[in-house]
Amino acid sequence: MDRYEEFHKIMQSWETAGSVPEDKIAEVEKKLGTKFPAKYREFLSMYGAAMTEGFEVAGIFEYTDRDVPPMWLDVGYYTRVSVSLLEDTLPNKEQIYISSDGGDYTFYLDTRPENYGKILELGPGIERFVADDFHDFIIKISNDKIFI
Image (cartoon, rainbow, N blue to C red; front, side, top):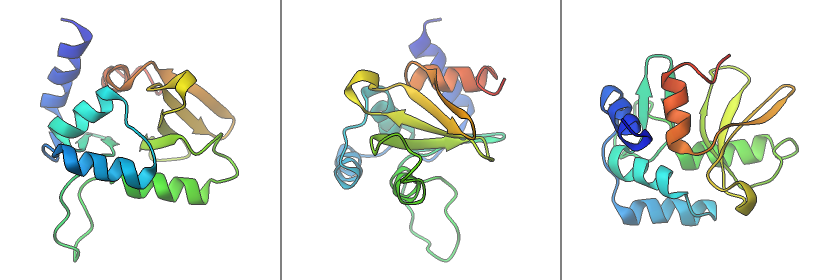
């Protein structure tokens, strides 16, 4: 099985928010001032946002009932919060929040030209790339290869 098939097989086993239209993805990109890498755009288009036991991936989803907390992590909201709260610690403003370990460590999709699409882990004493692209990140998470 190739990496593309492996990624989609994993996504089929996770709970997902559902597909997102292209115009909504473009709207969030515009708000964040970036262009999402192709593999993350594909994830958004097909799955929206996702979760599995003990792990969530931020994305885009329809949020209609404002009386209850959303079930999913919103990539636009969490990226804006990260930038405002961590302004002095983020290496730059070109990282897109995609997940965290539930504690001190956060994962960002890097959109700088030299690292475009790689996944960066930031936390106390750590600033390292943990995956070459979004598919690689999901596969590693699924196989417990990130939290070592």
